[in-house]
Length: 115
Image 1 (cartoon, rainbow, N blue to C red):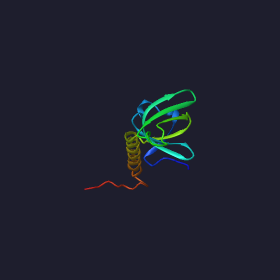
Image 2 (cartoon, rainbow, N blue to C red; image 1 turned 90 degrees about the horizontal axis):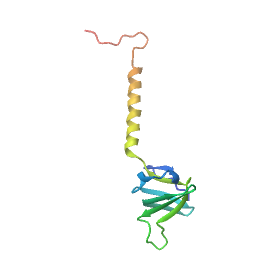
Image 3 (tube, rainbow, N blue to C red; image 1 turned 90 degrees about the vertical axis):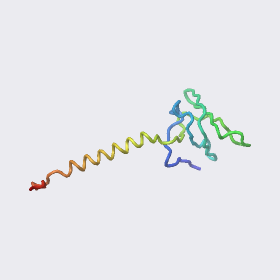
């Protein structure tokens, strides 16, 4: 199995997880047979490892609610909707500016309205 997240998620390394991610639903593949989806409850880290605690995953017969991952391990977090919207708006604004600049006078043609 090779889990790559969904369209509404972005990949970050476990080492990038921080306080702002607490409470978010994350997903990751801790081993080649398992994909985990859960709400991030806590993070602890050392130089090489990140220890995460999840809510909504444990209490099953074989489900864990704590994982230790190498700092470079990929974890998928929700896309930041506000930042994503800001970049989309900036891209669209840039295209509008380009189009407005590109519609200037071409080849000496006078395109102004006259009375």
